Image 1: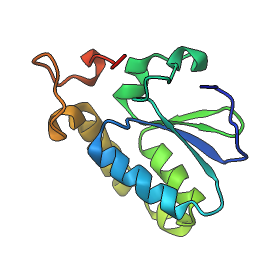
Image 2 (image 1 turned 135 degrees about the vertical axis):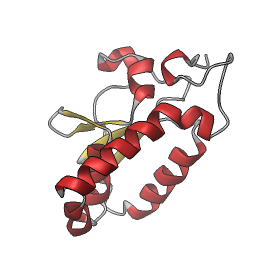
Image 3 (image 1 turned 45 degrees about the horizontal axis):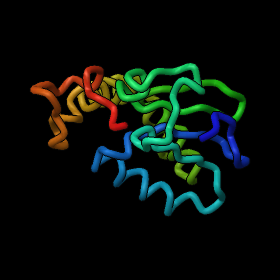
Length: 137
């Protein structure tokens, strides 16, 4: 696996392919990405090497992350904004930047990200903390 963007895309998204809800959204975005603006990288894939990106597996598991074509990293709700803009929902995405809605979405995503293992039935070793989840090797 390479850390370089291999297709001319606007954003590379690093997602948890073991998360059924995450995978459902990624599959939707793949179908909508008719112009190939998104590169999808599954951090749950055993061949994925986060150290090639200067990141740890736990960092990437803590919240969704994306890398823009210029190398800039974005996290959390901003990744979703960039993904949905890339597939043509820019005007709708603009609404999510309104102060109260933006704050609510950021809070909601942080709560989901912190609890997604429990919400998707993937707790391990008597814990549901994404930072303590063991990577499949």
